[in-house]
Length: 264
Image (cartoon, rainbow, N blue to C red; front, side, top):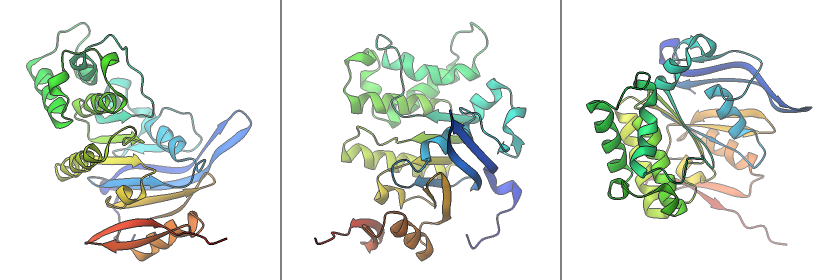
């Protein structure tokens, strides 16, 4: 990036972090600093280590090398503190199918509640706001198991939004969403960032990823590039990591990734 990033402007940083599963090294000595109050998308081919990196940043996987959240080592946060500051939406998130939509969203408020304490007025307000934002409010009394995959994904997003965390990490959040609700997700992310939230998302949908402020490009468990979406160097890095099978173009003022067909 061209701009100088000072420590107080960093939401999450990692220094030489590596992750192994069994005898396989998944991440290799990754250095990363993600800007606070911005949206960063993590992209790359299948098996690049994107989800592993996101889980390591969230503290969901053990890693070598330090990770810092909002200027503090991740291990220095208590579980409750971290759950308030950092919200998570993973792939194929599970929740009990017999819970109502409202109760699933209310799970996002647990870090704010005392032991066995009933939800507060603020908790109910946060849940309603989250369900309204994801257009799931009208299903609030329905069981989660009665919903389609896309509807379920919107409820799980509402659960993450209800936390009202400073940092929101999302792994493949557009899964099962139809195009209109993908567009709604984009508007939601932009509103969160405008309000000062840091958003980090792993995305396969490159054109959506190019709406972010910054892009992290990964390959083979390493970060090959980190830069602003509008920079030509970022576009070249994306084209390179996908073996020139895509090309980045400006269409109606937006960056889009178009397939490059290879003639046999």
